[in-house]
Each structure stands twice: as structure tokens, then as C-alpha cells.
Image 1: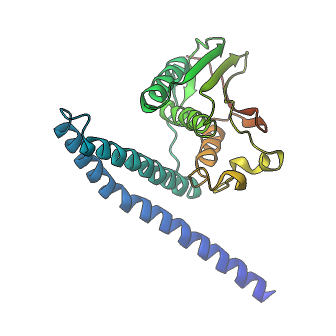
Image 2 (image 1 turned 45 degrees about the vertical axis):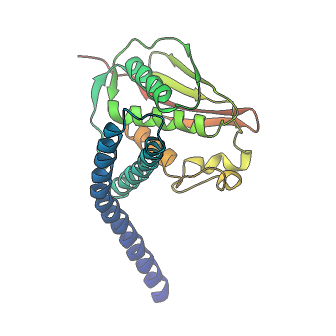
Length: 244
């Protein structure tokens, strides 16, 4: 019994040290990343009159990789906050329709090499949502980014919205490779990545876990449906609150 308690204590200490390392490392990485992004932006401005030069093209690639690294660091920071119960959610009334439109515009602007066909279906929500606008936008961007990443041979994405007296529901449907049935249950777990796609597609397996925590803190529901080769739909719901 003594050995068992010791093992549990050791595991707790290791887990705590791991969380502390993630928190410190992600915070320390933010400073040089911010400086690098600043220098890259300055270089891009100095090369704006030479859009066809190799230097300009290389700088754009550097900026793209920096954006990926910034996203990974932001995910690690969020994981650290979630593990320590400090993920901040600022509830205020906001326009979810406007957030969806902003995310769609963002996706079009950031996908320079692909012409996306993003279709909006269902009804306009036209009702204020009580929640954290930036965090809900983060969830939508993650769902949309996944749809783009895992649908490399399809540029069609559907955003469907619906509502009833109690909640609103937002779904993001792609027509990509799909998720095998055995991989669907743990898809929202921390650090989980589908083995069949882990080599082909980069990532730490943090995005959906963070999305799940954000929706939980909004007292909503989340989930997914998928069929191999036919595509995947991720969705979340948010409860309706009365505007006083």
C-alpha cells in the first residue's frame, strides 16, 4: 500500500512539473516570437515593391511558419491555463452571425493558394449570444482550419446554423478524408491525433481539446459525426440567455 501511495504521489509531482514546464516554456517563447514577427513584417514592407523577387517569396514562407509556431505556442498557453483552472472566459452579449462572417473572411484571406467555396446554410441567428466572443471565434477558426486541412482535395465547406427556444447550434461540415469510427470517441482528448493522419498532417492534437473546454465553460455541447472518405461535421451549441 505504501508503494502504491508513493507511485500516485510521484505521478502527481511529474504531472505538476510537466504543467509548470509547459507554462514557463510557452510564456518564454512568446517574447522572441513577437520580436521575430515584428522583424518579418518590417522586411516584408521593405520588399513590397519587389513582389516577384525570391527574397519576398522566402519572407512570406517564413511568415507562414511563424504563424504556425505562434498558434502552437498559443495552444500550449491555453493548455496550461486549462490544467490550472485559469482559462479566462469573458461573458458578454455579442453577435454570433457577425463572428461567423468574420471567420469566413479570415479563411478566404489566409488561403491564398486555394479558392474556398464556403457555403452558409440554415437560418440567420439574429439574436445576441452571451459568451466570450474571442473564444467562440477561436473555436470556429479551429473547426474551419481543420476542415481545410483534412479536406485537401475538396474546397467546399458548409457552415450551418440553427436555433430553438433554448440554444443555437453551429456546424462546420467538410468533404474530406473523414475520421474512422474507432478514432471518433477520443477526438477531443488532449494530445490525441488520429494515427492514420499523424504523419501526413502536422499538429500537436491540442486544438479540439481546447475547443471542447471553451464550449464546456459556456455550458454548451460539442461533438462530431464522420464517414470515411465522405467528410466530417464538427458542431457546438450555446445556450440562449435573455438580454436584460
